[in-house]
Image (cartoon, rainbow, N blue to C red):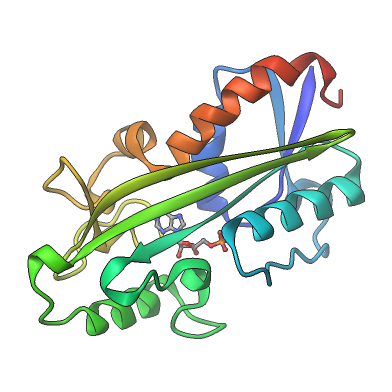
Length: 201
Ligand code: IMP
């Protein structure tokens, strides 16, 4: 069976990606299964640079085909912030709650029509003679306050277009149908279908 290693230590991303790749005959391994101390740097200026950096680092270390997601929230009123800084918006040791608090403070009093935002996911696949990249965007708005307890990160403050609930009020199945990561993974699934016979065993 082909193997893919997920180049992330984010357990929520692992859960989502595993669920969405369940239909494939692929063994999914996580970085924590292999190496507790490999450091995944993400100091690029773009999601693309960070996704490739993570996937390449893990491929070089394990020689297994590696899949990395770099993602974040882009708020138009904030000129695209938090963007690549999403995970550490309120500081390097920030919790999701602290990041949401900072964002909502910056958006306090901003009119509904100026609260547009989007989640972006870039997936990078790195392997032997293999480099592929896909992207997915989910448009929506920033809620006035946190709502819901599912998911992670900015899920409680993001209402995807076409819904009146935040990502954190959707079930995992609902989020995995419409999310930025679902869209980039749908494209990556097409790549995987083609490359499956050539992936590491
Ligand atoms: P990364 O590990 O640099 O890709 O960090 C991604 C950060 O973006 C996460 O820590 C979250 O703050 C945010 N993020 C990415 N995807 C999601 C999502 O699906 N829901 C909520 N927040 C997300």
